[in-house]
Structure formats: C-alpha cells, structure tokens
Length: 393
Image (tube, rainbow, N blue to C red):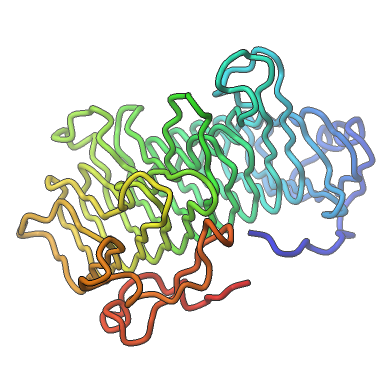
C-alpha cells in the first residue's frame, strides 16, 4: 500500500490537455518525458514501437491526470506514471468489460497509478451495487511491469493472457468482487510485495473468488513463476481461495499442460478457505516459509495442497494446518514445517501458543499475527519473515 506520494515532477515537457498530449505523441521518437497537468484526458491510444521509453507522467501526483480508456496495441517502450484510470459503469456493460487493455505490446511500465473501478446500476440483477469490469487486461505482452499501483472496486483486478516476463510488484489490490490477478499461459511471472485484501462477492451471485489464479485456458501451462513476499488478508471482507493453480479440467498427463518451475515463498496468508496454496499438475515446485493462517468468518481452514502427481517438490518451513498431497514420493522433500491449528486449545500447535495477536480482522480491519518466542514456529524458523515487522501501524 502506498503511504506517501512522490514529489511534484519538474523534469519533462509540460502538457496542458488531451489535444496537446496527442500532438506531443505524434512527434515523439523515444526518450521524451511528458508532464501532464491535472484534468480528464479521455482515451489514451498508442500503437508505436519507440526506440527508448516514452514517459507519460502526472506533473502533480496529488492531482493526477485522468484517463477513461487505455489501449496500448503494438506499442513498445511506454511508461505511464502517477496517473488515474477511471472507469464509470455504462448501461449494458458486462461483468468482464475491460476499458484498460494492453495488446501485443512490449516493454511497458505502469507505476504509482490508480485503477478505479465502478459499480453496476439498474441491471435488475444481483450485480447492482457491486463492482464490475476488469481493471487491466493484458494479451500477448512481453517485459511488462506493474509497480506501486492501486486496484480497487473491480470484478477482476488484472487478467493476463500469454505474457512473457510479467512483473507485478508493490501493488495494493482490494475491494474486488471476484479475482485479484488471473494469469494464463505465462512464461516468466513474478508477483511480489503486494497486498491483497478485503475481497467481497455479490450476494446471490455465482462469484468465485481467488486472490491469485494461474489458469490453463489457452490451453497450456505456465513456467518460471515466483509468488513471494505478499500479504493476502481476508481482513474485513469475504473468504477467498488464496493461491490457486488447479487443473481446469485439462489432461495433466500432457506435458504441455503442466506448470513448470514454481516458487511460492515468504507469503503471509490470512484467509478462510481450504485452498491456501493449491498447485496441481506441476513440475519443480518449491513452497517455503509461508504463513497460512485461518481467520474467523470463513468457509474452511486453509492448507497447502499440492497434487500428488507433481514432481520435484520441496515443502519446507511453512506454518500451516495441513499439507495435502505428500505420499512419500521419492522426489518430494517435506521438512521443518510447523503444523498449527486454531480448533482445539488443549492440543499442540494451537494459535494461542504460536502467535501474538497484534491485529485481528473483524476487530481492527486487518490481521497481524506475530510469532511468539519459543513457539514451534519460532523453533523451526518457519513461516513468513514479514511477521517480524509487526505491529506495522
């Protein structure tokens, strides 16, 4: 979550309005910095492959330039910084509408920006009054970085299909109706140092919530996935699946369908669904030093669930209620995990003996469980090191 705004920018070419920006981009060759005055710039459409980055930045981060639609198609070397992407529901918009899209583009950076969604009205359905649309849709992109952004009030925050070298770091994702980040057919994916929290579905709908979902729709698997140093917090919202990479009904005996090289490391998970970390049909998996914590108000106790057909699996130094899938496979290593539980105070591993409760979601609006000195978690050096920063507020 961003706690401060960058300083007012002075280096670059001032741009007063949408017409001036259009003229500036027509003449841009690469290497320019455009500083946008506050105001509504409408649609930003770019399809030029620049030789070096073209930076479009709000001159005053406290009064950012606003775009109501973004289309980067066939673009290269574009950096958008400190801007406001504002979606307003229009009658007839389906729940999967995407006003902000990146298509067939490479070397794209979006940083320090806000993707602000909207709510459906007048549909006569359960969607009324709830978030709608996709915050950012990416198709066939390469060398993409989303850093320090806020995604709020969407059906799904980010959908990425067939991406290469996609980095999603330091973002704040909240008030999401369905999924946080959906990824399909990625080669090189890093999701780190983000905060996912306060998801909530539309009452009476078929909304199915995942904070991160790795899919096999294309159909093919993904490779070189890193999910590290994130906080996933049900907080005051609804339970979700946290990290989910299911089979999607595909033949996981087909090598093309399998995920490869997956690292899930040092994450804090506070949730109320059995699928805390669930990865199916994958090869070369490392699940290490994650804290998977059950919080009240959910559906079930979150666990680590790796399908037994996965190969070359390491599960170590996690703090979690249960590990599913380990059947003494010769190429699996499972060790030094702290098995914890919140169901029976008289039995070992109970939360009261493992944690110091600095904050609890239903009371404080967020969760922070510190490690109790001398506990099983402490002795095994298990769980996420992110807890060492508690209390953080």
